[in-house]
Amino acid sequence: MVKIAFNSALAHKALGKEVPASETDPELAGARLGSESSTAGSLLTLLGIAFILSGLIVGGACLYRYFTPKRLYHGSMQFSDVSAGVAGENQPYYLPRVEEEVEISDNMAVISVPPPRFRSGDPAYILHDFHRKLTAYLDLTLRTCFVIPLNTSVVLPPQDLMDLFMQLMSGSYRSYLVQEDLVVTERVDDIKPLGFYIRRLCDGKETYRMQPRSELPGGRIQKRSEEKCFTIHHFENKFVTETRICKA
Ligand SMILES: *[C@@H]1O[C@H](CO)[C@@H](O)[C@H](O)[C@H]1NC(C)=O
Figure 1 (cartoon, helix red, strand yellow):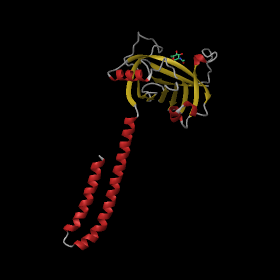
Figure 2 (cartoon, protein in one colour):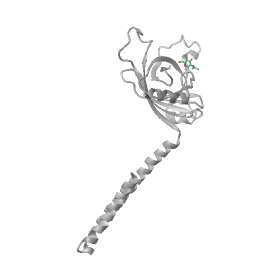
Figure 3 (tube, protein in one colour):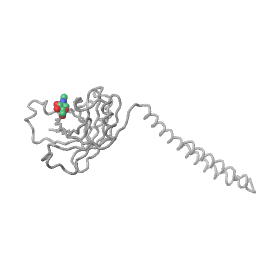
Figure 4 (tube, helix red, strand yellow):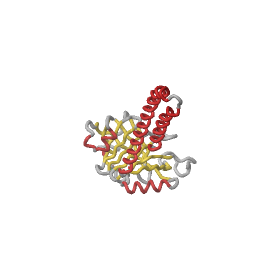
């Protein structure tokens, strides 16, 4: 692409120089066309440079993609929500569906959850840092980050996650819903100790730590009415997880 653009720029320039030579009065034509062709020439040169630069940028981006070992996948899962109403007897014709894009590398996975259609739930980025054993949810509606230890019984390791997405690419997948109830515990002022990936994701956003509600002292019973809760539907295993995050 770059080469062609540059060549055509040169060709135009060459053409501009040929014109005065074929004129009957070379001096007059040379003076007139000279200034014109030099303006046109410099414009074309600029255009050429712009093409080269854009080529370099695109090329650089491709190289960067090529050399960092990460892969992008897209997948969707249909699920039946056993907790919602009469299960089994009253199977709806339309099963809810969760879609996601995921980028997987050796030690992390970033999942992009789009705003769900026909259902409540927030769009989000979910980052699993397998090395530091942490998960961060960036809720895109609230523009807030929530961090919790990686739950390895929910999140498949990178290789298995890739296998799952390969499987999802070949047809539709029916699954079930697992609910997860998380509670915000404290605000994080310094996100540096959370590692490079989470720092990059949560930079400039309010960040909080969370805990499973079941791990809170008296957690299962206590449920304050003034809590603000929101949900994110996602999957990183063979089932869909409804993560409910509550802020006191
Ligand atoms: C991981 O998630 C499962 C399912 O939501 C839950 O039962 C379990 O308690 C969680 N484990 C930890 C350590 O949070």
